[in-house]
Image (cartoon, rainbow, N blue to C red):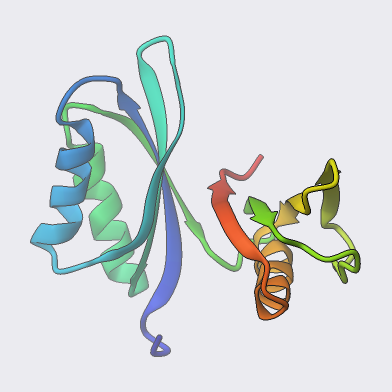
Length: 149
């Protein structure tokens, strides 16, 4: 990414009804912004939380947020820079060897003898751990970014 383009996460609270995901995707598409990932984090009581990762200038990121907030299905939007230390991640990997060199702050949980591992912690630390485990032939089953608390 250029110095003008930055990595962002928009945590969008939406009403759980048909067309909500399409409406959100349309906002990005209409402005020529592709997203790195989009995921539904939780749906409960008629409201869901979606995480959208994208690259944009700060100005464009704020335009996207204002546009999302005007959608009838959107209740709120929290824009967070990817480098924000409060952004957390969860990763599930398979075929992980015995040795895991996880940095401080990353929790490692093994599930039985099959080599399945769950990593949790700050986004940057989890992402770097996943990258090093991939180099050792581990397979990423899931990678999810969680909103800051």
